[in-house]
Image (tube, rainbow, N blue to C red; front, side, top):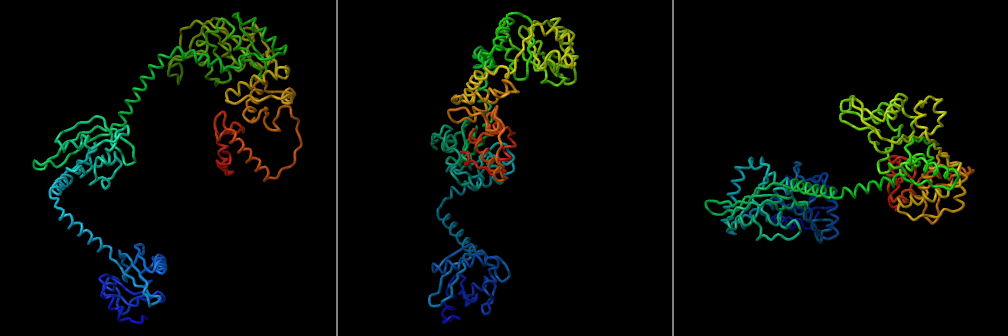
Length: 618
C-alpha cells in the first residue's frame, strides 16, 4: 500500500486524463481516478489485477515497464489494453516512476480517438479561419461533379483528372490511376505538374509556366497535345496525347480537366517499323557483300578443307583429287568413319569447274526413311498428307553444281533405284508432279563399309555401285598414317584456339608420342575432338590432353582405392574446375556441361545437390 493514499487519490482525480497508480510488485491497481474507472469499466474500490486487462499484450507491457524502469518515464501505443468487458481500447500509455514509492508507477491512458477528434476540430477551425472561401467553392464544384459523373468517368478508357485553380488535383478516374500507377489518395490535393509532368523525356526539367495544362486555366485556353510524357509512380515515362480544357463555375474560372490516353505502344510500334524499314534498306544495300561473306563463312566452316599430311597415302589422295577434279566423272569415296571423306569431296568440288556453284551435301542417314524421297526429289503441294507447299529436292538444288551423297548405303533400296534412274536420265520429277526437270549435276558419294561388303549385305544395289564407282578414292584410317598426326594436331589446335580466342599452347614431344601410340578408332574426327578439349582445359604454355586416364595411348594404371567421401570430394572439385574454366557457363558448345560430357540439366542438378556456390569458382 502507498504511504499517502489520500494524497495520490486527490492528485489522480485532479488529472484531466484517465490515470492510475500501479503497484508493479503485486500487479494491483493501487488507486485510479473516475475517468480511468469509467474507461476501463472497473469498480474503483475493487479493481481487478492489471494483467487481466492486458491479455496477450502482457509481454509488450513488460517491455514497456522495463523501459520506464530504465529511463524513469516512457510512452507507447503498441500495448493493446482491453476493458473489463474485453473491449479493445485505442489508447496511448504514458508511465512514470513515483519517487518515494518504490515499485509504483503512475500510468496515464490517453484516449487516441478523443485526441484525433480534437485534432480534427482544430484543423477545421484553422480552415475556417483561413478564409479560403473561393477555394472551398471550387472544391465543392468538383466534388459535385465527381459524385454525379463517377460511374461515367470510371467506365471511360481514357485517363481523366481535374485540377483546381491552383493546379491541385481534385479528382482522377480509374483509367488514369491504372496508367499512372498512382492511387487517388496519392494524387488528390497534390500539385499535378510536380507529380506526373515534371520532366521532358530527355531528362530536362519541364517548367510549370511552359506547361500547356497550366495555361488552360491560367489563360483560359484549350490545348491539344499529341506527343508528351507523363511520369508513373515507379519513375517510368509513358507517352501520351491529351486535351486540356478550362472549366468554369458560374462564369468563374475554376480549373481544368485533362483527358489523355497512353500511346507508348503505338510510338514503340512506329519506332520498330521505322527501324525495320531502315534495316531492310541497309540489307538491300549490303546484299552483294553479305552473299560474299556467307560464301566465305561456308568455306571456313567446312573446314578443315585442306588435306593435311605428308604420308604416302595423303600424297596419293591429293594426286587422285588433282586427276579427277577437272572432269565430270562420278567419284566414290570409301573409308572409316571420321577419316575425312567429306573433306575429300569438298576438295574435289573446289578444284572443279563447278566451284562457283554450290556443293549440296545430303547425309543419307539423317532423314527418316519415309521422308528421304521428298528430300531427294522434292514435292509439290498436296503430294501427300502434310505437303503444304512446293519444295525442291537436293537433286534440284544441286543443278549446275555438285551433289555429295554421304553414307549412300543408308538409302532405302527402292530409293536407290529411283535415284539411279534420275542420275542416268539427267532429270528429276517431284513427288506428286508429272513434269520432269532437267538435271546438270556432278555426283560424289561416300560410304564407310567396303563396296564388296555393302553388296553382299544387300545394302547397296549393284547397278548404283557401278554408276558411282567410276573413280574410287580410299581414305586410309589415321592409324595407318601416324606420321600425319603431328601436322594434323598442330592444324586442328590452331583452328580450335582461334575459335576459342586463346593462345596456341606448345605440343611437346611426349604428347606427340602418346598421340602416335594411340589407335584412333574415331580417326581424324576423334583427333579433332581430343585437340579441342585439350585447348579448353590447357591453362599454361603446354598442351594437356584431357585427364590422366583419358590420354590417348596411356596404358591403364592401377590406382589406390578411394573412399566414398574422397570420390565425392573429387567429383565436387572437378565440377568447380570446369565452372572456373568456362567462366560459369553451363550450357552451350563451350559450356561446363560439354566439358564434362554431361547434359546441362544434369550439371545443374549436381551443382544444386553438391551446394556449389558461385564464389567457389569465381
